Length: 192
Ligand SMILES: Cc1cc2nc3c(=O)[nH]c(=O)nc-3n(C[C@H](O)[C@H](O)[C@H](O)COP(=O)(O)O)c2cc1C
Image (cartoon, rainbow, N blue to C red; front, side, top):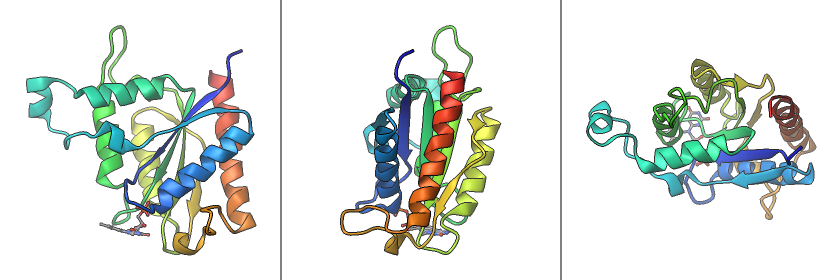
């Protein structure tokens, strides 16, 4: 059997992003488990705000097709989202919207989500750690017919959660992240 491949996508481009740090920590946990892990930046797949007229005129942008193919080349995907006004920030939602419109030859539209494993995590400086964004993201991915694993991880008080090497300080946070990683590995192995 080929090595399990997992893609990690942080939903923030901000310098010093709490979510990018969490995505990096998740990457280390996957690597320690022997997973072939890829962590990308949505900054390398920049996309215009979804516009049906633009799609009619010019088709789906190349970056959306590239992002879709990147997702398809992995057995599972971890999305790490900030919370904006109790929901998923436009950067990540827009990427999902465009990718859901991609239709490669011999595929149905949005096939990269269908019955494929996704895990979700969030980080915010607040008490709830972005849990409302996770609820919104779970709904979005479920509507795309993804398998969203039951476990999820919300990192509260993210501004105090990392040490000066950007590692998680608290054992409870480390264990929460590891549990999420383990479940995505399990589900991805069963569906690969
Ligand atoms: C427009 C906007 C709305 C926000 N709404 C929320 C919110 O509803 N809940 C929350 O916990 N944090 C909220 N925040 C704070 C973000 O969680 C915080 O900026 C976080 O650091 C962003 O993630 P990042 O560090 O990965 O960039 C909001 C920030 C912005 C810019």
